[in-house]
Image (cartoon, rainbow, N blue to C red; front, side, top):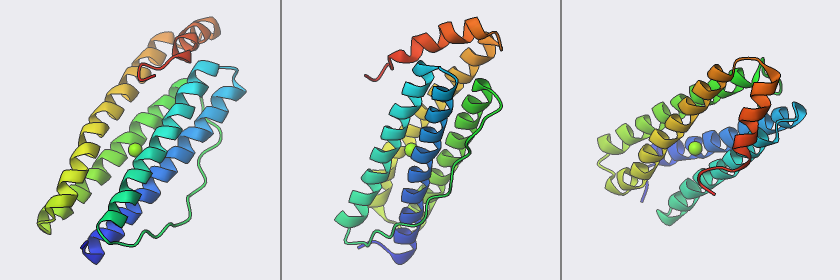
Length: 164
Ligand code: MG
């Protein structure tokens, strides 16, 4: 059985993963508005992935006899200064998510909750991947600068994601 503190913390994390999904869906809409279908598709796939993260924790709380409590999801930002600014926000956001996962892990350690530690290991590894991908995108967009032609060529590369 999950402790009440752990249950509440996991419910918070479900909300954070759903907010991440919402933020990336908003970024997908932003890239659509710029006629950058590659980046829009990448963000849409990222949105789907964040839902699987939320569902993983959702299932885990239920498997441990806990109670999932869903909360309001904050409205995401709609406009971004530039494609680069959006990717920089992705990186910054994923770093916050990593810190949040690490805090959950520290709580699981303090409570000697071994099952939650094991479940969170997957998320710790996943965050390494998320930050790596975001850093790569930031670098690519920095290199592209603000030349529209270069941005469109770069965007065309994202019509296919590596994990497809
Ligand atoms: Mg996530």
